[in-house]
Length: 237
Length: 160
Image (cartoon, rainbow over all chains, first blue to last red; front, side):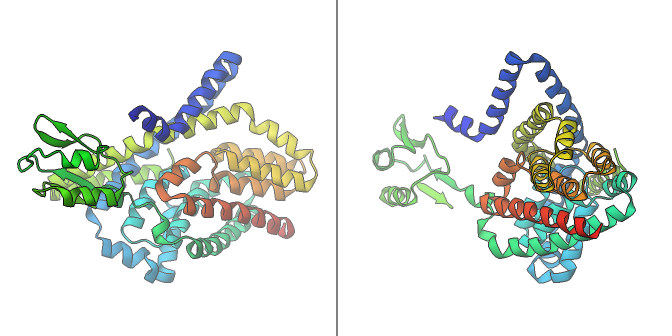
């Protein structure tokens, strides 16, 4: 069961690994080239990801929810939109570097629209990138593309906010629920193991939680909890 | 490293020092949180990176450019947008490539479609984005970005 679950979580990694193995068997040269091509991206990731994670965690620790809600929430309106563009534009690294930061900002009250603006401008509007564009395609090309991109982001971030609601976004915190069993008070009646054998088992003369994951039947669990004669099971959603 | 990356590093280090001076326990907790985030995302990020390496080997950007250059406008636009969607290419490769395309007389429409979808829409980053934000958000953002990338390209074709 555990292996299947682990494999399911990492299905993408497994598919890529299998593709590489196949490639090395069929065309070893191409396999080597692929690894070489990946090296640049590894470097790019190592340059930005550690600092993004630390910065996200620090902001999460020190910036109050009210502040984020005030500056990036729905009520922030135009100011929030401008701030989001600035945040995305002064960033660095590929778009996935924006994911942890945006998850944290949303948790603290940033609106969906501003989230889309930050992600998109993080991807497309970056000063070093714009300079590069001027060099190869000319100033006029860059300026027109920049203006059109900003307009496009303004429009589709508004549409996204109409389609997607806050509750559609995965809230990791909610998923972490805690189930505890007080073994001091358990008297070993085995009722819980009979009611919900997937979660509860017996260890010696007392019950214990032998497997608990997010896929639980809440109703069944609540019944099990109320059936316990000594109320030793506590479930915090 | 460009100046922005360096600035983020310096800013974060200063932030970390101040944080450490103000509250050691909280800072340690934050660092643990950062480490946990990294551990959680590492597998997905590595998959993305190695997948890009693979795609670039099977479909080298230069070959795509040659192909796009010889196609009628509509096919060229769709093909370059699609190619931009499935991969992520650093700007220092993408801009010179598109520069040569435009200089060789290829219309700006496919070139712009390629440039915009390249960074904004991601098939390879889709699984990770879905895990972090949910399917609806990810599908809406990527879908709309793709549509607007083509609109931007067409408007630019008219203007330039």
